[in-house]
Amino acid sequence: MAVTIKGLDKLLKDLTKFGDDGAKAVVTQLGNSKSNIERGAISRVPFEFIFIKQKINSEVEDRGLTVKVGVEGTDENPIPAYVEFGTGQFAKNLLFSGEYDQEIRDIAIKFKKDVDGRSPATPYLFPAFFEERPKLIERLEKELDQLARKV
Image (cartoon, rainbow, N blue to C red):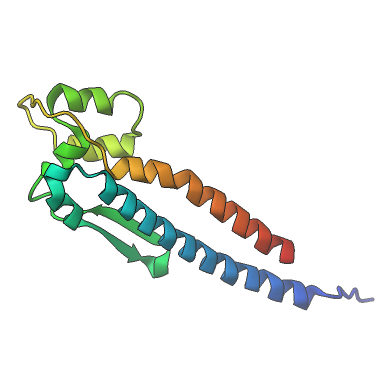
């Protein structure tokens, strides 16, 4: 006695295509978000810190599945971090307001000095990220849902 499942080959091919097309969609949307975050950050940098605009850069890794946007050379020159997070009490107020999650706080703490500063924060990079994140998720959900309906 044997049981035959008709259409299994087609289903497996469709699932493989969904995986391939889904990965392409993710890479495309991450690339779009990378560009949007870069543009958003550059547009928010205060005029007096124009040099920061030239240092905003991005990296693409893992065949496009990992995207990083940041400010080049911040470890050597912490001014971009001071502009983003502020110094002294300004930094404390911003970082512990609940607006930033622990991962971002950990980045900011790397630039904390023992001396209290007096520079207010003028966030530019993370607001661009926060603005783009829900848009990316929405676009991915929509695109992946459309691909899933084809299977």
